[in-house]
Amino acid sequence: MRKFTAELEREDVAVVERLEEVSATIRRQAAQMGKREVRYLVDTYYQIQDRRKASSNQERSIREADEPSSLSGFLAGLDTFAEDKIRLMLQAYAEGNKDASWAMSIIGIGPVISAGLAAHIDITKAPTVGHIWRFAGIDPSQQWKGSKVAGELVASHLGGRKPTSEDVYALAEKMQGLRAESVLRLATTKKDGSPTKLTATTLKNALAVRPFDAGLKVLCWKIGESFVKVKNHKDDIYGKLYDVRKRLEEERNEAGLFKSQAEQKLEKYKIGKETDAYKFYSKGMLPPAHIHSRAKRYAVKIFLAHYHHVAYEVAFGEAPPKPYIIEIKGHAHYMRPPNWPM
Image (tube, rainbow, N blue to C red; front, side, top):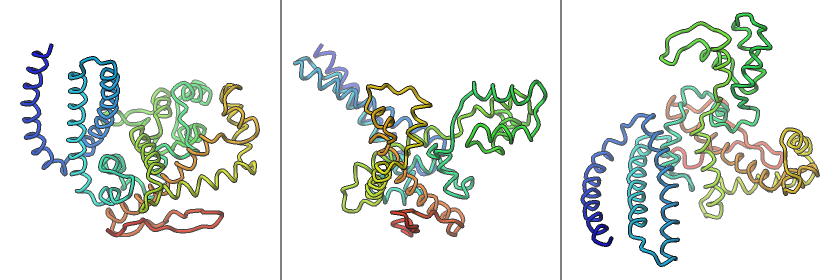
């Protein structure tokens, strides 16, 4: 076993050296990567990170059991190597984009998230930050109801007749949070971009499409988690906004201002009566985890408002027409993006 392990390690040292040479070339080309490739690398990075964490936990368990751990440790090392190289490539890409470079200047935002934001967000399709919020799936008014609900709505609305553009607008409104123009485009366009006839089937499929970018939504969740972790850093901004918002949400919650939302939760979902969540909802209040999520989402939305401002100026040479107004303790404020211009 030891002989096999030693031979394996010698071979892999050669592989790692070769990867070092290749990665140096790749880093030089990273700034010119396409957005699709960057999105793939961001997804791969987080997959490898999760696997590396699992390998590290497995190695620790083996070590504590006094069993040989060289192979499991080696696998964790390979994942760490791949993680580092992908991060370097994404950093090179981010440094080549002004909006991503601004994002990296923010405490809690690293090169992977910065590159991911630049690759997921097309500022030419986002005249306001609201477009980004919806695309990221953090607009509460937006709901993804899926294929079953879409099919039922189309069938009941059309009653067997052929759909028209007016039907598209009416059904998009019923699905909540869907833009009728986007639904119409999806329903009358094939995957290859060529036009197709509007039918009940194409309309149903268009209405059933997820109305947000899942990859961007995951990034926003990670951003929120990061802001909470860095809130005590002396140069942090958005973690402190999270803290302020959380206190405000707690005050509103205790004052019973979320009673209707709590009642809707109990009506819409089957929540076990033995859970802590049920105890709060039954009293007309939101549970602490819900308040935590609301405060995180608020901080992330402010950050995205600032990202939109920066990306808009970079793309069009002027500030966006309608800056986002921040409400703090009932007062409206406009907060310019920190560290901008850089």
